[in-house]
Image (cartoon, rainbow, N blue to C red; front, side, top):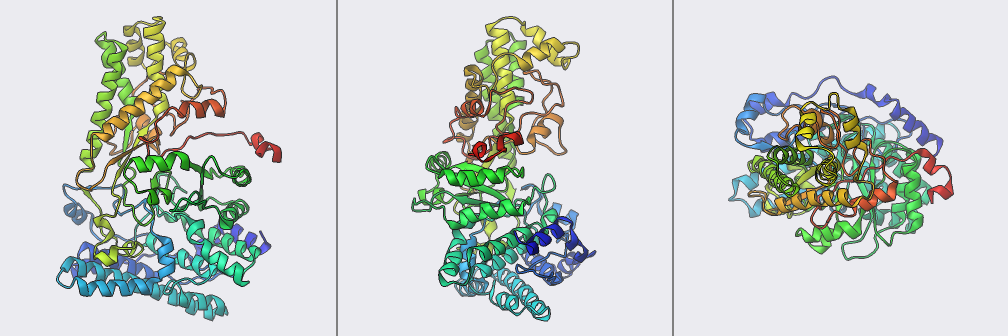
Length: 625
């Protein structure tokens, strides 16, 4: 990375751009109240006023422009009115539509003026439909706001003595991108406006697929060489880190700026290209937390590509995250996705699999607490002197009850309007229907959380109480009720001895498979109550590995006391697919062997196997290979 980009990166790391941030935000609420606007109209006005409030910032040497200066999203309803308007309904997370991915390739190839024409044409077709007319007029209002913002940036570029940048911004995002530079600039601006409109966890999608045609055309025409292209890409990545702290998330940096590389094309061909490798190289050089890189792999993935990805892993950023096409695609097919769409999957903000431009899957409606189900089954069955088979039966029943409760809570889901986001999805304007009305895929995702602790608890009871018979049921119940006070020897035995998930242990892995089979059975008995979709069970835990152990305000999921795997109350569970805290696995292979027992064609919502490796693993080229 050259000195200009290094200095630019270091300035972003030092947060120099924050001096341009404004201390006030637009008072959209007053205008909404005075004009008595509908929710759709308020959403469009929010986008418009946020764009108008932005002050163009052009820093020395920049070639990808946009620095967000308005830091907060103003409310469009009072808290009282918002409560009245959503009474009896369920809002997902913070409310606005989130955790989906627009059809960015479509947007870049169309340009916003063509989307505006599509809205105007649809208006004539739906002239007798007031709701459609309102949505289309609001969509046009947001398009005009974005075009005006781009125009002001173009004028600022002229004033800054940057006519080439001005030329680009006069063209995009209004017109279809015609170069790699234009495509990057158009994406940067449109992406930012989605976030400025109140949406969050906005996916970038299959970046190396929709951007590759622009790169290839430039390379073939001699407009760019590889070095210059990598410089533009590096600057685009650096720019994403300017406002990443403004996006909501469970923790700072949890902002959903994810992209995915590689895999297959929709017709089944190998999708890796020059841009796939370029993204990995550039992300390694930039060495910043955004964007989060995901890599689709299979049994046929080239070793050199994996080595390049591992060089990025070596940086310690926590990515790339790997998605296995040989497992994911069949899983999506088994859940009703078409083969073309399944091959075209990307990831949501975390790891869940979604279809860009076609999916309004709500991938996280909550978590089934597998430790709670296991603990309740163990305590109730032992208290009644029942068999181990009775424990498993009780666990199944509890998992079903938890699934039913989550689905019931979301049976009254309300998704607020999203006029500008809808512009970025092919078909919304043409149908005269806002994104909130649904897309081709409208499924729910449920986390099967903290599975290793749950499986280890069941395994410990089977091993110690029923097989060895070295511990009486009433004695185990007593130490659980006492949170292992005065029972350190027994606690250590339960926590450290015997079969454990992650050690390729037959009994523990059988319990793990049982839990996810039970979750799959429970989800297959439900639908998602009116959205025209299904339930997708997954293996992730997100923040629940803490919440289920310690509690969280407003949490629907049950809190879990001391558990039979030797865990005391309040101690965290395992995150995602990882051995329980404190378990000494026999190495990465034994971990993979344990988790290979799960039937991922049924458990298809995603969830990573999470492993931390010493940096000594990456000490030289041979160890990386």
